[in-house]
Image 1 (tube, rainbow, N blue to C red):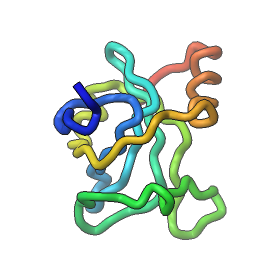
Image 2 (image 1 turned 90 degrees about the vertical axis):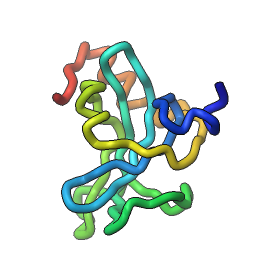
Image 3 (image 1 turned 30 degrees about the vertical axis):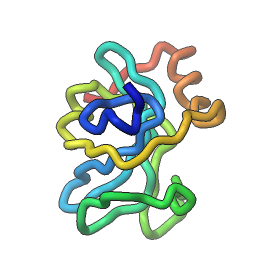
Image 4 (image 1 turned 135 degrees about the horizontal axis):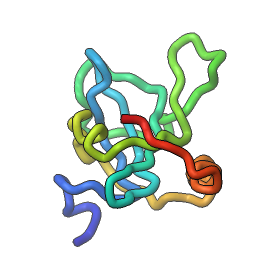
Length: 114
């Protein structure tokens, strides 16, 4: 099934709007494993759930930004991510540089956030 037709499924390269407290954020799935998911979380927040997103405007930011920060790699329990009520937005192939944090995590036998 094409990623563009799998609107209710999770897949690598998919961008999803997610619940983030009283607002919404955007996450990209980098890797899916049996019970884990590895995502990139962008710093942009929205008052209402976005139905589309301009990928060129998404940023991770830095810890010095006063308007928030994202994360290049977040390893999560798959059930935890599903509690964020992800809604598919669009797709972009996962690039090698996006997997740098995942590769470090894998080499170090890292844990996951519940």
